[in-house]
Amino acid sequence: MKKIITISREFGSGGRSIGKAVAERLHYHYYDKELIEKIAEKSGLSKEYIEEKTESSKPESSFKYAFLGPNLFHYSEDYLWKQQKEVILELAETGNCVIMGRCADFLLKDREDCLHIYIYADLSFKIERIVNLYGETDEKPEKRLRDKDKKRAMNYKYYTERTWGMAKNYTISLNSGEIGIDKCVDIICDLVENM
Amino acid sequence: MKKIITISREFGSGGRSIGKAVAERLHYHYYDKELIEKIAEKSGLSKEYIEEKTESSKPESSFKYAFLGPNLFHYSEDYLWKQQKEVILELAETGNCVIMGRCADFLLKDREDCLHIYIYADLSFKIERIVNLYGETDEKPEKRLRDKDKKRAMNYKYYTERTWGMAKNYTISLNSGEIGIDKCVDIICDLVENM
Image 1 (spheres, helix red, strand yellow):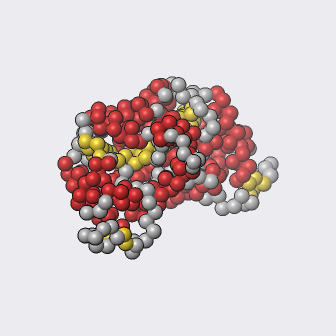
Image 2: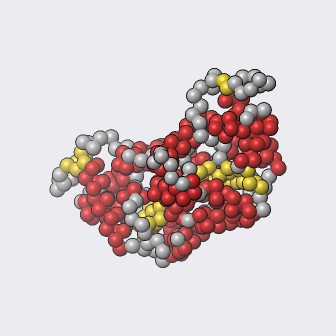
Image 3: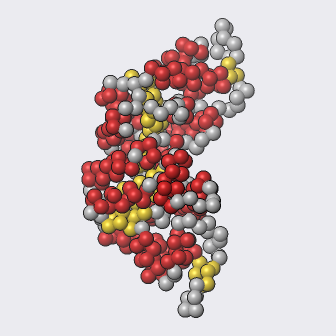
């Protein structure tokens, strides 16, 4: 029985819905926003800053510091990465959890009790999904998808030196648009229980 | 019900065993060596030449010709690619088949009745497997694996302009070493029957 499930996903692929459903069915803890809170608590950095930097921002330079308030010193993105890493390694110790994004697949790659999942989909599926979920914006959905995933890929590359979306980084990769959200949940839960 | 299953795989990952087992269970036709025979028949090229060029050879140049016998004119690798493409498109029309390698995932990417699979595994699993299956050679197994997959990746890149091993090229990607050969077969057959 696998104790930890990491889910990396393309924006709009339904990865978050899959992660939540898997956690619910297996009675595992679901870490997404809560992860941000834990990193904030540990690091003293603001949730907004962490949210921006841990997933979707281009790390412009490891020497770029952010000044975050009168009681805080200068922090580099490398400091944040270190805190994020420690929080994820600690969570892994407690087990029975689903961890969304934040390079958890890389940070936990040497643990044998992990199942690493990658969820992606075709453009048309993702466009329909983000417009339904988040509504229309002035920016075209194609551009929103491209920008978000480009940043995720750059962030991943910067910290892990791996290419985002390569099958070999994961135990299993699923095209949620073709396979369907519910079927993806079934496959993942079955693997957790029977691998 | 998906009518065509394409399987791309790393050398030593057990992809061939998975393909054969899937074909057997679903009563689908299994095309691997037979594909070579069909391309040979259609093109007039030798089986050895095709085997060498369709999977594991670096296409040095599209202008490099091979002189193959007194009754044959000069053939370029692009001629072989064209023949291979036609054979695979014709086979797809007949349906209910498993096609191993040979860029079939790319050639059939626009057909909705296809399930595209990528099978890979960790180095230790692949080493053990090739030594068991093919025996020891003077060349270290790490090198045999690296050379074979490097050639497959270059061949794939040359003809498809895609990166080999990117999850998005497939419906599902499976780490056969972690998941197990039998479980991979179960997952694929279930998808074929229920997608």
